[in-house]
Amino acid sequence: MKDDIFLDYRSCIKMGLLPVKPPIIPSPKKRYNEVSIPGRDGIFYEDLETYDDIVLPVEFNFRARGETVDQMFRYFRKTLANAKELMRSSDPDMYYKIKKIEIGDLDRGTSKTIGTFQCDFTLDPYAYLRVGKEKLSISKASINRYDLSKPMYVITGEGNCEISVNGVSSFCNVTDTVFIDTDLQLCYREDGTWINTTLSGNYDDMYLQHGKNDIHVSDGFMLKIIPNWRTAL
Image: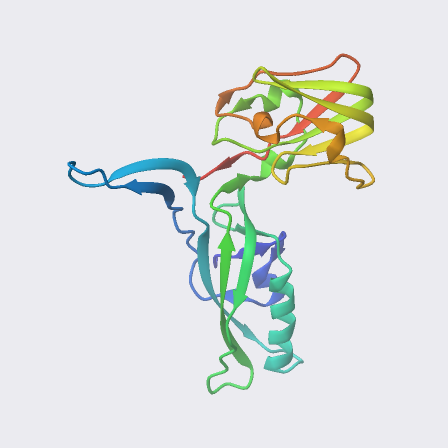
């Protein structure tokens, strides 16, 4: 079976886009601060505990059926440009967040029906688990077997709510259901209204560390967590 790429869960092969080679995700490179110390050999490297984005180059080809090669290329270009997530058939439990897409020029060669082009996907350096998108109870989300993650907290109730993560408390004025997105650092209601000013605390303090996390919420409130589990290696 040919290796496939899924963009927002849509199969490229079923769309008519065939990856010429199996897509291989490059390993992310860690960031270091290099310091040269007089009197010492070599360089001192300070681990910044972050990674550079990764770039996945993919060469696609396609066959025009019922339309011209140029018409098909315009369609694929628009479809690719709007994609937000990338997944591979060889690793179906993981997905990557797309940060930027650069689409190369169309190469028709000598054929009137076959086109080829390259697409460079700039991806977040982490591979995300698909199961990490699910809303979980506190007990299930508190165990993080992967790298530090930036979860979404979903709080339902009425009034001022305290949420404690690993001993650090944050407070939020809750009406019905409130979403706290620690990745985008946004707090909003179910209708999309932003309520950042009602949250007291630091989003960074609400990240899920590797291992066991201690999470508590005020009585009378229901808390669900979308853990956004991820791994760089």
